[in-house]
Amino acid sequence: MERQTGEKVTLRRHISVWGSFCWGYADVGADVYVALGLVMAAAQGATPLAFAVAGIVYIFVGLAYTEMAAAYPVAGGGHYFTLRGLGDFWGLVAGAALMLDYTVDVALFAMASAGYINFFFPSFREFTVNIGPFQHVNLVWLAETLGLIVFLAALNIKGIRESSLFNEVLGALDMFMEASIIVIGFAFAWKPELFLHQWHNEFPTTKQLIYAVTIAVISYVGLESVSQAAQETVRPAVVIPRTSLALIVVVLMFALAFPTVSLGIVNWRDIAQREGDPVAYLATHLPYVGFLAGPMAAILAATIVLISANTGVMGSSRLAYSMAELGLISNWLSYVHPKFRTPVRSIVFFAGVAAAQAIFAFFSGKKALETMANMYAFGAMLAYFLSTIALIALRIKEPHTPRPYKVPLNIRFGEAQIPLLGILAVTGSFLMVIAVLWTHEIARIFGPLWVIAWIAYYIWYRYRTGKPVFGSLPRNWDEEQLAILAETGEWDLYERFRIELERRKRRAAVAR
View: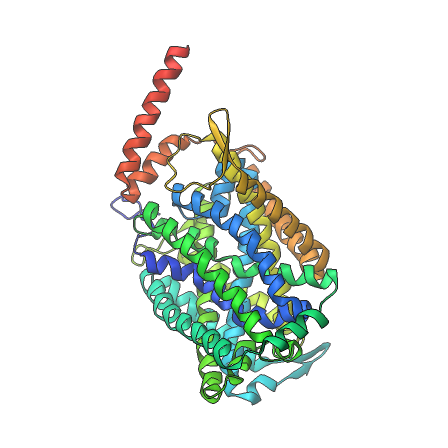
């Protein structure tokens, strides 16, 4: 998109360290409010184990994303890393997987936010009607969900600064609330004998535990949000490593603490039966403050899951912007509003997709949240799998690219250094993809169909526009990297990279 003066309109950089952290935390903090009941229904007394196993994979994938997002701070996240490392076709596949993940994120967490609001309106929560063959459809809850999706779309059209500020304020308040529930719970209500009893006597089957792990792993999509916002982050080479590493630590603490404190206060069945508001239910069982903590948790839960829905709108629109700019989909979606400088068309398009998904989920009956959660893991794990392969490919193809952060524990392979933890990330994410396809009936069908539909569109679009269908467009990645470093203001890295390119050219000339 260009102004009438010919100046190219690009995404603006306004996100700080705290703003970048909140983009990622929003996705993960929200999962505690939504997925705790879903995971506990499957993992039972082993719920902390399910979150821990998912957390191990998250550490490996998180380190990989930290390296790539700091080295390549552009909109697109995992899709861009995959395209640059593996080529256009696989970049499209990763992008399609992430589009599914982000649109489901918007629908699921807008739905959950409305559900927590209805904590104060039981009649809204319980209202259902039968419409022909569709049973137990809650039209009130559906209307609330659609209203929130429209609100978030308008917020993101207005601009990333306002949207990021929205995340920052509510994110800080929510972290305080979550920490308070955990501290008060452990200090005044936690019974170790109850926790141990449920751990020893209420253990799930192997398939139930694996299913629970695949639900728990969706807690850890926050780093993708940080990557998506990289092109709008100030000094990304400094900000992103700090943000991502802090996010890994904070996320693991909350993800492990909540199921542990829950199993020492209430029976797992009670949490499982409150899939719509498990954290608010837990908060009501805190001594001395439970009568206030429950409603307060419901209010903050409604806000934090709305933040996560907001990151979904942001992520899907920036992803489409990146894919269009790289020639994978039509340029129509890359239109940037000249006043707000946001990708308005992609925001509206993917908000519409999310609204359609929400309607589908509600018309599926009482298990609307579970329907959306089953779709959530497929896109994330497929994209993570391709992105971690891209980490290794980029280490081999571009060993000279400046990397402000590098995944530790490397072995030398020619000029490149291969990260051992990156290999573990590839292995772990691949096993998660297999587990999702094995245990998620809905994702097993609709996930691959979604990706196949985007592949079909990609083939048609590339053929119609005369671009290579299964090959990649010619790109000068070294020149693009110089442009990225200049645009981000990372002048030290720019000079290091420029000098390295000149050295490589001289060495190549001597070799000839």
